[in-house]
Each structure stands twice: as C-alpha cells, then as structure tokens.
Image (tube, rainbow, N blue to C red; front, side, top):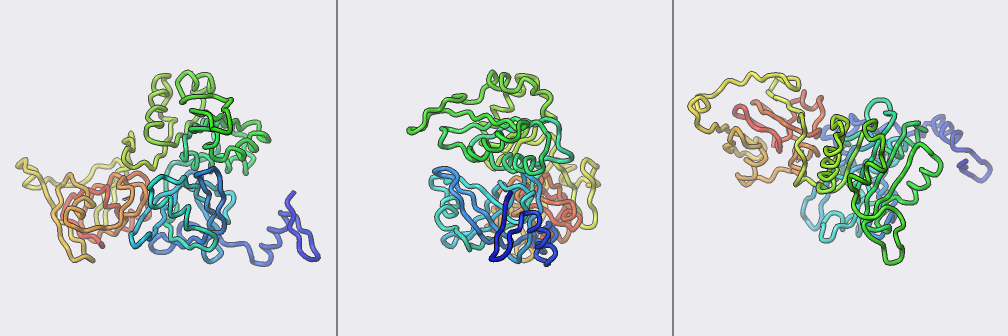
Length: 402
Ligand code: FES
C-alpha cells in the first residue's frame, strides 16, 4: 500500500486522492477540446528515466496543472526547434491513460538522428515542449477483448506497453500474450516492468525473443528472429486472438507474411508504424470528400462533375491559393496539395506525409478536395473544413489558409 506522509499525518493513496478532490486539487482532464484552437499544448518535463543503454522515458506534465485524456496506443506530435531548424516528430505515448497526471514518451537514441539525440542530451526536468493533441486509431477500442496478441520489436514496444499498462491498471481479465523482439537482452525495453506485471497477472504472459547475446549476458530464451514456427508454437490459439503489431516496417511485413501463411483472419490484425517511408496501404483508407459547406460520409459518392479537360482526356489541373502566403500554384488532379506547395517553393509544416500526424492540418476556405487520411484528423475538424494537405487532392480550384 502506498503511503504519503506529512509532519503529522499518514494518508493512504485512496484517501490522498479523496483529500485532493475535496480540496479542489484534482486536475481537470486534459480532454482534446482543451488543447485550444490549434489542438496544441505545452508539456513540461517532470522526469527522465534511463530504460536501457540507449532508451529513455520522458515524463511530462501539462502546463496549467491539467491531466491527460487519450487512448492507449495513440501518439503525440512534438514541435521542436533545434539549432534554428523546425522539427515535427510523432512519438507514441508509452504511459497508460489510467495514470492521467503525466504523459510519457520512450525514445531510442538513433545514431545521427537530430531529434532523438536532442531529446536524450537536452531534455530534463523543467524543459518545455509544444505538442499536438493525441491522435491515432491504433488502440484498444470497446470493451477489452477476451484474447490479445501483442507483437512488437525494438522501440515499437511503446504503444503495446501503454495498452498492457492500461489492462494491468484496470485489473482486466483479458488474456494477453506479449511477444517482444530485441537485438540482445540489454536492448529489451521495459524488461523488468513486464516481468513484474507477468509475475502478478497470470493472464498476461510475456515472451522475449533476442537475436544475440549481450557481452555481459548470455541469452537463454528464444533466439533468432520471430518465425512462423515460433509463432505457431507460442500461440496455438492464434485465430482466437486480436493481434496488435508495432515495429520497423520490415518486421511488420514479416509478421503479415507469417500471418498470411497460417491463414490468420486479417480483419483482426492491427498495426502501427512511424517509419513513414514504408507504411502499408490500408485496406479501406478513410476517405473524405471535403467541400466548403459539404462533407460526405466515408464511402459516399461525390458530386464532382468532370471538367472539359477531363472529358477531353487531358490532365486536369486546378489552382490552389495559399492565402496567407499570397501565392497561387497549379496542382494536378492526381497531386497532393503539399507536393504542389513544395514544387512552388513553399514549405508548409509537415511530418509524416501520410495523413497520420496532423502536422499539415489547415483550413480550406473554398473548394473541394478528396482527402485519403490515416487518422490524422478528427471528424469535428473535417466538419470545420480542416484538411490535411499531405493527403488531399483537388477536385476544384481551392483556397486554403496557409
Ligand atoms: Fe502528417 Fe500531413 S504531414 S498528416
């Protein structure tokens, strides 16, 4: 039992929260609507923890004494200025929403990576960072399923760690098999915490697979890369499990191939990657036809009338006016607005270029676009004529607030 002590009092944790609430100290939830007009907020670093030799967890609190609201598996986008250059980077939240007073990201130092190295070398208690509100559809939705299979590799562990911590905190009865792949035993992120969870929650089993020994530790567990034979031996009830996978693109491709080989029902498969170069195409990407004052539901047919150029077979182009920049560019009907902006020399903010992170979000003042996003925009924002220009193609001349 956790106890808080003062000079004359000893208060157990539950009473402490009750006492805080009674004294008006319980922070209000930091719901998405509280992130302000631009869905942004300032995070203040509270603590940095060394997780492995090249991985740190950064714990942030919300400026203004607020608590966080998000779904396990979602990510936040940090807006950073490093040596005069602007960077926008997505990091999955590794903490669970059941511990709402801090939000954590867990970052592996990438050789030569400007952002991960800056975070490792410069962020400490008191550092203030601007972040965009949590986003992402890679999350446990609805009531906990009876059986989950979590598959992760390297720092891809973070979203499934948030899910595992959430299920642990809620005392869930869900049957979880968590298989994590690492290079060596020294590279296993959250190793001791996962072992501690598995030790007290028999319904959560954890298996590590390492490719090699570490100089100071010979690996006695499963060795090599996860294979179909390993998967079948570890998960005889695979068909009964909902699978969540996160890791490098090559790892996830091999998982998809293995699951295909054993005839797994891929409707039960979920994956996440921030390796933006090689995101797999979604089977049914969210498609939104946006027009000033008209928003069609996913899958609805648009009301686009073919232009004379289209009817004549010529490539169709439209004009795109970046109103604040005072520039109008030509954009082909099969070109994203972001590409057209870059071709014209504009540099609007962008990060993932896959409709995931929300960095390129802006308001469409007039016109129509076909937006094929990956969860980087909320329905209420679409209703407000916000668009992600990295994944929006023009259906007419367009004016945007950028
Ligand atoms: Fe990430 Fe457009 S750059 S959603």
